[in-house]
Image 1: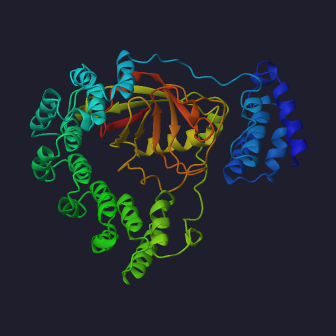
Image 2: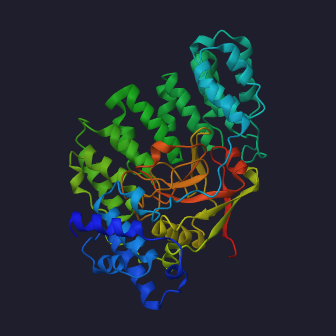
Image 3: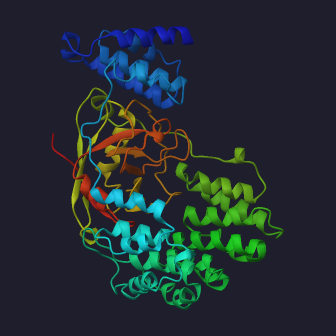
Length: 484
């Protein structure tokens, strides 16, 4: 459809009311089939599909909206027409406006107080662990002479529990010691150097990963070489990244060996470290690893494949992503037409327990909402972790084995809309347009800068205080679909 015709369709669509008899009539089977055809066309990014034309001329305003929105999204990846299309003149809004917890103001103030040892010392005694850990992360060399502050860091390391697999809600397990060793590496390098060997042998991989970060600050290449062979790929990734920065190609033998790792994050790090290597075995090793990762047929592992191609001196255009997409789930039509579906996220007891509820926003992002609902019903998210926790930004994860370079084997298409990234909304993690990896992020504050690039597919409607309390590495027990 030419641009002028599209503009006419959008103008006509917006002019229609959202209430009235036309909206009250039940749709026929043929109408539901048409809605599905429109959404299939949107998923395929096919602006020539006749379903879009048929939907734009339909008697029901809901179907005209779905068709106009689909066509606008297909033609413009940034969906600049969102304000005139998405709500038929009535903006889509979130159900609940959540206030910030009081501690978040203390957390935010720390950024401007990072050079004040008095302020950091006070924050180390805060009632909320998110604030305490933030203070440790901000503490710099200027506070290295503050014996009271350093004593707290020593205490956190000494208090690392024998069983660091669980914590109470609002508490920590491994977190304090892990953040403390990195802070101590900045403030008192000699003291940190004496402590990193024991922490590098700890049962919790998160402790070993933070120890790799401390070793990087200490330029402890011997310890980094050990951690580059760790059994956990997140630890490998941290150690390889640091080792590459410190030694360049001197440790290419280690990096070549790491190409055989099973985790995309470790392989990507190793491949990046090998770019430009003079070793003759790098190109054949990178090519062989690339073929193995192609055979895994996972769209979300693209970053590892591209890094392997670059290590082999090949262009990214040589990538061979998996072909084909699974059919749209059966829930996509009722979600698109406004059916309300809520999910109850139940945190594991070892992660402090508690629950929070989400409302899927199929009225704004029906395809993504339906695909997430399908994954929930499969149990895909049960046992998943929140690997990224930034208490004044987002928490991210939910999927199995989550890491920035791990995700579902098929990309989820973006469905940008007028739902702003306000506190409590739930967005889809991506690595660029139309690369949703099925990881969620929950906005812990208003993040309006995310509006143009990330899809909101759900919102928290109950229990946001539980999401606020989540710590890095906390695990989901299960997610239930609530009865309607």
